[in-house]
Amino acid sequence: MRGICKKATSKFVEVFKKCNWVMVTNITLFAIIVSLGGYYLMQVNNLAITGYSIRDLENEIYELEEENHSLELVIAQKQSIYEIKDKVVDLDLKPVSYLEYFKTDVAKR
Image (tube, rainbow, N blue to C red; front, side, top):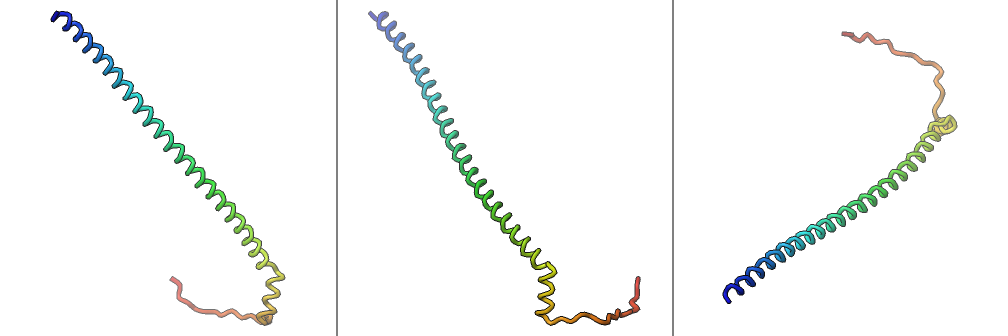
């Protein structure tokens, strides 16, 4: 009777060892899949955040280009001959009738 129990016990141990190996493999694969899924979700989240940042920067670029364009128009208006003539009248400037340059004898090295 001992031989039969020993055979049954050894078969049970073999089956248990095979089941244990399969169970460890399944748990390991499950952990790997869960880890890869978590990594994927983190990457998708980072990509979405980067997309929003790029969109905000593009909007800022557009606004700065618009502001630059309007400032260029203001500069062009301020440099126009009509604006300069108006400033001459406002500042009560007179035209120069005689211009004399100073001659200096500065030591040159």
